[in-house]
Length: 476
Image (cartoon, rainbow, N blue to C red; front, side):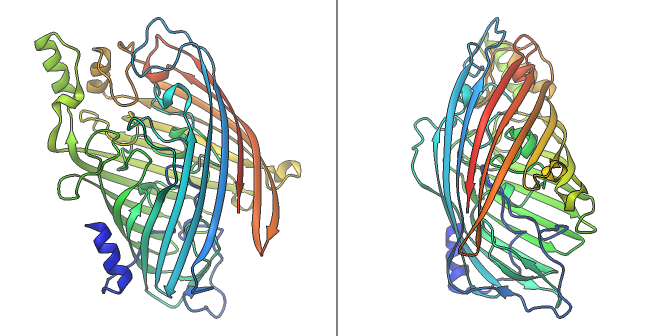
């Protein structure tokens, strides 16, 4: 459905509106900054330039390579299950490489095409935690998923100006340089990542350059639609202004939990609605998110009841039912403090109903996180950054009863459970050096990352566990 829609749009079919805010962090991407409430986009000049790109030719917008070597410590482990952290510890390297291109044949129409490749694996198979510790890796998901170049994004974006004021947009991943209307309707459709447009955050939004833990660059209680790599077909409608924005998105869900195959929209879909309040370029930004998933979802209470009646281990997949729903909410705040906004703090709160199956992102039903970045300008290294944050995650009563009875999800399953909230602390340092090539910056980033997790997998009987990583990131 959506590929046909995209082809129709690119060929010139009439459309009302245009895409959501500039695309950004995918499952493992570096986000350009949002148009609303962002210092990276300049204020309108005295005589506003007309909307349009700097060039109408297709162009390479960005390229990146990221290497992460991560070590997991040994941990206390009186028992383990199929999705437990390895008790003896582990270490794994990961590599990602990507190229990101765009084209603006018209002042109001853009197209983007991204390719990426992933190599390596997360420690302990990227399972055993609600907050996985390397956000640059794909999930365990489909067995034998190929380590090859794949299409990360392929979509069209359309903008309908609602006034003469414009803002300057700089070159970046999925962001063509030029001028855009400060107030506009947007529509975008194609092969996307839902977190390009929802739950963005300046200080906690990129595993490649900021916090590595899933719970610190995303709201883990938001079970957003995606295949195993983190992408899906969908569309976004949005109203964007300098002070506030409202966006609605719909995406295809996978056919099974954490699966690579996607269902049709009429059978399974995610719907997101987000209001962003951003009164000024360096003011507090608040995002309010609501989502509703409809898919072939299982029910934790039903799985436990069947297991008790039959004397078996509960299996959430056996209770799947078409049309079952899961809903949740999120609050996302960023607060610039100093250094032109490069020093600031952020916080997230997340909640979902918790009785239906965790299906696409991770197994977390409650989230509270808080942290921030400190600019290296404080020690005469203006491009460097020091970050620190904590996340506290929980499960609903039906979800923890299911795990305690021996059930497994796609990330959790110790065989038993002595429930406790999962507590995560992370700190990182990012040293950066910059050069210019063909009037575009090249950035090399290097730095360590440390994470400490209490009650891994929400289990008081296991852990604590420590993770140490070295991250190298090169971008153009």
